[in-house]
Image (tube, rainbow, N blue to C red; front, top):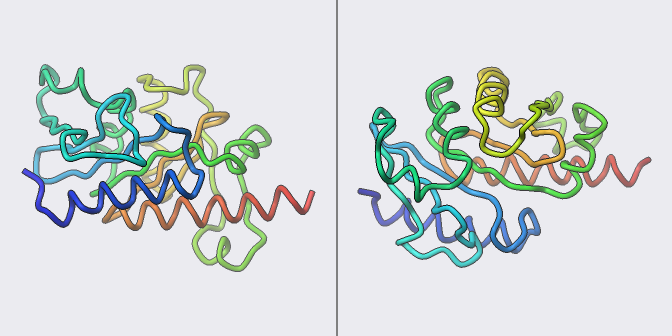
Length: 184
């Protein structure tokens, strides 16, 4: 079971992600891993208006866990990231400027904050970018050596110790993409 503080993080950062314009009304997802459980937002939930019942607990080890059907479509990607890295939290959004620039390849920040956090932001290019095994494999591989990755034309996955760290990385990446876009 999630502690009150982590539940509050889901509610607050979900709202912040929506208000920052990093997702549309029913897009994006977040998760945290606690021991053998992955707590992930429900399929079709509104991150900007999350309720406690929108957080689904799935057993990380049990591929037949019936809660997988309720979990976000991107559960397969979250699970792969947790298996491949030391992540404790994952934030997946559709940041408009970064997603737009993902069509051109990796992002190399030019702004001070972007350079502070990233030397580059890699781009994974699966044929099926949403919730596919291919996406899970490519994204988790890239995140072994990076804290954030873009999926071409789809959005980003940020990993960290907390949802706050994932949110911070996502907003810093989107700011870097904003500056790059407007410098062109």
